Amino acid sequence: MLLDIRAAFDEMVTELDWMDAGTRARAHKKLHAMRPFVGFPDWITNPKELDKFYEGVSFPEFYHMFTYNHKYMYILAQLRKLQYLVCLGRGDRWEAVRDFAQAN
Image (cartoon, rainbow, N blue to C red; front, side):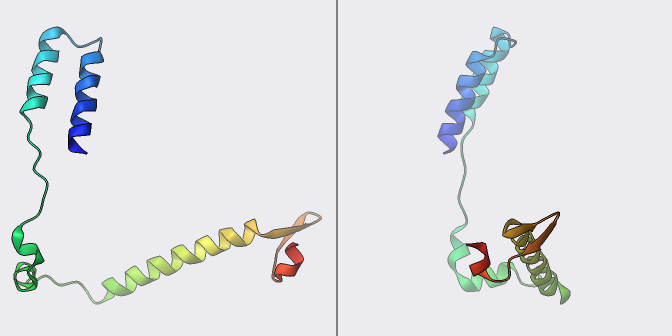
């Protein structure tokens, strides 16, 4: 993926009409000098080493409750949107469908 991004950027620099030749050459040189370093340390798959790394890190007690409440509120909002999507029109008033047989 990184090589694809580099190739796309290289092509884009080549096609820029506002960039002078010297700047374009320096941009290409800099681009080709970049080396991708993507990965993770060997110790990350070792549970003891991972515990050692995160030793002393703590979250407030309310953190998990906040996460739960956030997800709950998001789901509730989505259900309310769905409720409006599945409605029957009765004059100028809309009512949520409570019986799916009504929707057919």
